[in-house]
Image 1: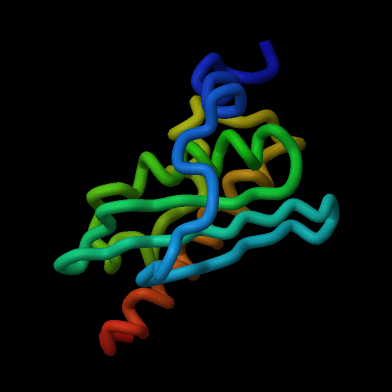
Image 2: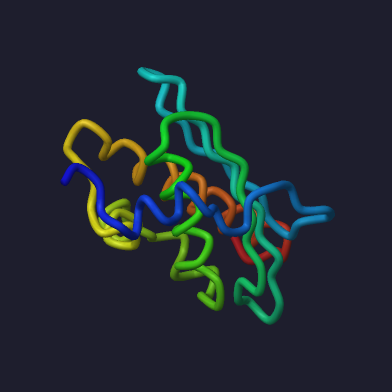
Length: 125
């Protein structure tokens, strides 16, 4: 099988999709070769993510990885997210085929950017 059941479930039933009003942090990641884009919004309380939402444009794995990524980071401290690896995001969907590994890179970049933005807004850069 090409995709895991976890990835297929997140693609068919994405969690946390859509914009967020007055987020505490926003970040984007992109993969220009196929024009995939992910935008992640964070709501933060006491330095931890209490809510994460996303908007993604691109292939199914990018949408699924965005959904899984928002679940992965909820409850996490911002400082940890600044270093979030694409491998950790990829594991959240049960792996990706080599030709779709960019999905985890796009999403992890968006999460790292959103965490940096939130820390900057808090004066903790």
